[in-house]
Image (cartoon, rainbow, N blue to C red):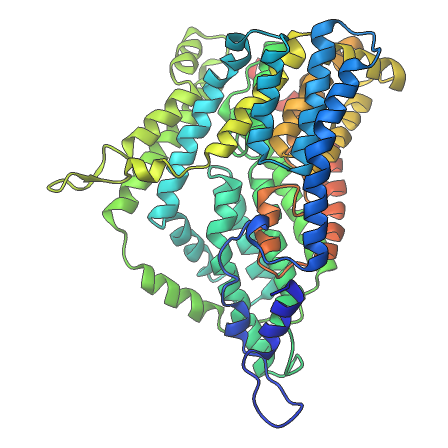
Length: 549
């Protein structure tokens, strides 16, 4: 069944009445749309299938051709830089066209680097032991517990039951975006959106039925094409992107960028430091996001009835807190407290104090993450049966593909710096573009990161762009801290296309968001987000980092 046929089926699933008269069965239209299906699992139209097949086929042959052609080209570069650039170009093609899964594309590149003799195998694979890799392993395991035991869903229902939300369509959309942003600050953006999608569709079905009962839509309307649904789904996807910037562990690009910045500048960015710099920007980005989505996708109705009833029913089904939920909250709370604690010490004793040095070294975020995750295997739910909050089979289901991609991203970022290729590119860019000020380099960094993030993974964007921006700034005699951090923030964008990020793919897979609406809304938010980063980040860095020293 094609996408068009599926839409028609939703409209005609329960037609009744006289000839020529049909009434949409809203429940039937939404049935099967409330769970995440990746793009590869969707039933695509012939045109979509043709495009996807062509994209993957082109990439399968283009990647080796690009690699070989650049490797043989008469480029004035040292051998290791030349071969690294050739392999990286081929990997970027693999990441964009996806003839193989994105993490596998990165692993192919790492293998090629070693086989071609750019670096020894041990040196190439060393970044896989980085503390940031273990930070994400621990964070993903904590997220798995929150999803398994319904902690995140309970929190979502609590927010929606607040009186402030009321019966306002706009407030429901804002509340859902707020829920997503808060959760994605600590939980995988993809997992957050996938977990909240069924609830979003449930609320959307309530709105659709209300529109139908009040005869505000045609009797045979398509509930999968309501503007309120588009706004709600895009708020879910984009809200996760905004929330992911709030903490260093909110998304992989944050940790990659932070690590590269600390290495290049010697400035440590603590957990609390990051939040103090990111939170004001993210708050204003959330306001901008709300305005963009509600203007471009103006809801068909301003006030709705029935949402509170739906939420009350869902909360009743969830029931009281279980022992597993309490254990999950304990592990999560301990982890977050230990992540923030070094920042509190920095505020009280200063970053130059021995106490801060000791605490920050011993409470390494990667170690804290794995210790916090370990609590889930120590806190029992049934001691007599020796049952604990999580089993290893639960942990084994975390997104290891993202961890692999994260590791290969660090490898390429490290090699770009280690071989000097990043510096070569940076100096050439600085010379050709005449970038001589912090503002100009920051603008360049943000634009470059956004463009790359729209065509490949956010992690890959950070791993490629940040190592380029740092030497660009150094070549101009400028501290790279602000431009590199701006590039790190912008690398988490990618709001235009379903392929830009998994969170976009999830909401696009629901069938509610047309590609044209995603592009239009995404471009608008890309521009506003970029302006906020360029204008506010230098001020916040000066206030936060300056006051800490």
